[in-house]
Image (cartoon, rainbow, N blue to C red):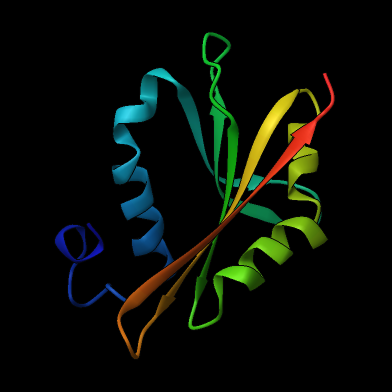
Length: 118
């Protein structure tokens, strides 16, 4: 999806990867409200999927990295308290870190589930 949706000139940047994630989850519009660069905790969460009231899906917080690691992305979500932006939300939250390695042209992903009390 990344290769098909972005130009060769902008393939290696975070905005292109963010666009691809937005396109990949386009079918989820009935279940989620998508928020890019959501003010959260001590910074901005790259992409947040907030479940609509009629959905039983978990909230998803996505942090994108470039030439780093997916684990580092998930740790950033936790350290900067991005989930604090979902203070009104109760239920499962998926913390998702995605890294793109420019040298190998590979993506890596790590997910961790947390739960907020109802």
